[in-house]
Length: 239
Image (cartoon, rainbow, N blue to C red):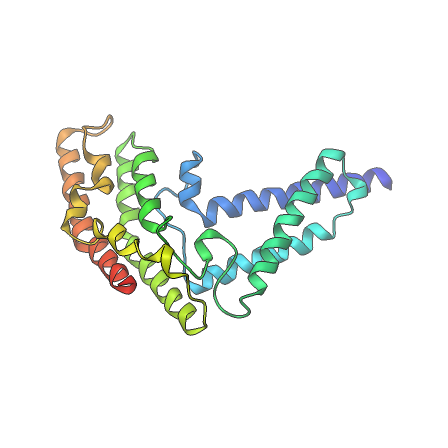
C-alpha cells in the first residue's frame, strides 16, 4: 500500500511537470526557439482573448492537480519540486484573479500592458532575428512564416490595450513616452534594412544563391507590406 502510494505520488508529480514543460513550449514558441526547441519555429505566441483564458484555465487546473498530490509519498527532491511549482501556480492564479473576466493573465505575453519602453513585440522579434537557427531553407521558411503572423498578433495586442483602458487599467506615462520613437524603425519601409532583415544578409549554408535571393525578396515584401503597416498602427495607438 505505502510503496504503491509513493509510486503513485511520484508518477502524478512527474505527469504535472511534463504537462507544464509541454505547455511552455506549446504556448510560448518564441521562448522555445531561444531554448533550442524547434518544433514551433514558424509560430508566434497566440495573444487572442481565448488563448489568454486558456492559459489561465491550464494553470488553475494544474494548481488543483498538484495540490492533491500527497507530499508524504515523495522524495525530498520531489517535495521541493512540488512546492516550487505549487507556489508558482498559486501566484499566477492569484494575479489572474485580479482581472476577473477580463482577458488578461499572469504571463508576460498576457499582461494588460502589452509593451513599454522596456520591451515588447518589437524587441522580441529582434532577438529572434539574432538568435534563431538559420541552417537550412526550412529555418528561413519558418522565420518568414513567423513574420507573416506579426500583424495578427499586433492587432490582438491593440485590442487588448483598448479593453484595458476602458476597464481603467492605464499605464504610467513615463515608461510609455519613448515607445513611438522605438517603433519608428519598424513602422516604415526602413524596416527592410533593419535588424529583422539581418538573417538574410549573408549567404547561408544549405541555401543556394538563387533560393537565397528569392527568400530575401519575400522577406522584404512581408516586412514592408505586412509587418511595417501593422507596426504603424501600433505606433499610432501610442501617439
